[in-house]
Length: 235
Image (cartoon, rainbow, N blue to C red):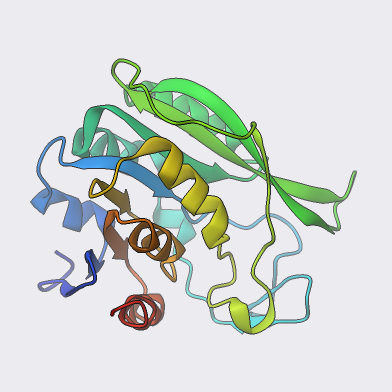
């Protein structure tokens, strides 16, 4: 687990690991989690980074974000996610438009069966070379046969992206959106895994809905922020 033993935090139904997912995964049993949701780091394309700063609409700036994107390959970590996920369970993975097709191909190669392409409508636009962007994508897969679940809504999920002081991480996803996926795809007390948890919005979504959570984060800054986030939910 990392160069040394990984730091671990446990509380409020969550277990958080500070370390590389590929190392942490070795300690996880086959078919031991009920859902996987993750927003994996991607190599930024045009306009995101400038002099070590990640810039985005809203005025906030994150310096030296430390995303180790070039060393993360879909084909390396997706088979581990497949192994750890139980049969008849669901896997949700966020993607931008540039990574959509290679990510899908890698998921299929790992054994997943494609279910749906969901659209996260951010209700705000970001400049682009062509049409201004206002959506991100969520690829939905299952492992093995179909499991009856409580799906609701549509394939377009309208949500509000965290902004200003709400935003702990530069690419943080909205907790209400993740809560919706968790409620649709799991039962109470089931366990969700996020191998790239960032600032842990998936953990908050799970705990608020009576689910267990396992999260892994390589960067110490985000791991510590995740600990604080989970501690704030303790009763």
